[in-house]
Length: 187
Image (cartoon, rainbow, N blue to C red; front, side, top):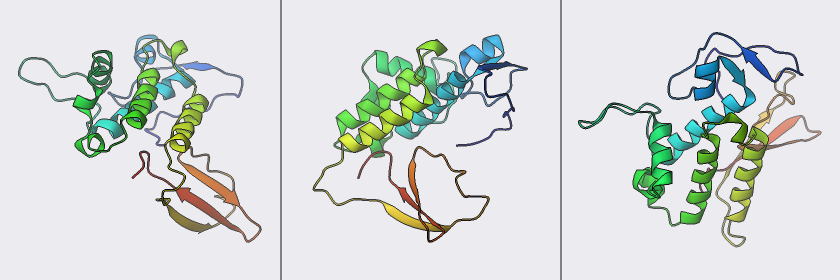
């Protein structure tokens, strides 16, 4: 998705890395911040913040209001979920959609990704599967498909390097790649 300059090479059998804490505030896993141990579940937390950004249209660090100090978007979102106020903090463009169950399902995934206990967070593989399941469940079989199709020539650099959960790819013998891009929340 993005590299904020914190990538480290580790062996395939390593489950975590202990290092000096670095990263972008608002996206940092609280466990990583406290323990300096970066795990695959740290990425899940950061992805949860990105999902919340998409749902709310807000930045990861909220500006302080008159009656409180600034807080993270993750904390703001978790409180809204626990107080059953999720629709109060949604981006108005998302909130006006008549897809409340789909939005709740996305919000629930984000909520689970933001669990303060890393062991209780889903894996990225589970998150990807759940997002795909939601995408398939809420598609109307009779509705017109709203996606764009792009064709890219395959080069040695691109061939097989993409592993994106938001796109589906198919390789053909014509040496081109077909990528279907669909919106996170249907139109």
